[in-house]
Amino acid sequence: MNTRPLTRLCEKDDIQRGIADIQWMLHHHYYPSPGQVGFIIFLLRDEKFRVVREDGRQSFLAVEIQSLIDVLKDIRKYLQFVTRYDCDGCIIRLHASAERKYLWIFLECVIVFILCAVLFFLIIC
Image (cartoon, rainbow, N blue to C red; front, side, top):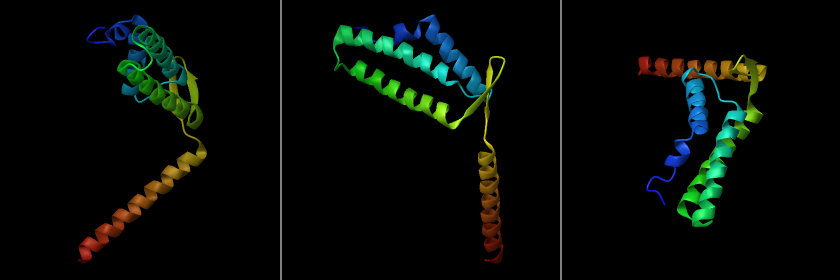
């Protein structure tokens, strides 16, 4: 087995393009689509099956890859159920629902009130 077992996976054009797309979106304050995360999961599964064939199901690398897949599945579920997406060309923007906007306004008001109260008590004491 190679000393850097995931090197072969990271050198694939598909995985580099998928990771570069997600990095670009995060850098520009966008969120990756569930499909992009699913594509990375698909590639990791292929690599895991290769590792299981070569080293067996209980190999350390297979367990590590499975933990990565589980985390990415949770992220994909979050993106599917919590957010709504509006496609603008190839860019996906996150749109918060009306309730979420009001929740943020309420939380900001609470934070401002708490900061004012703390400032008031600091001035008095």
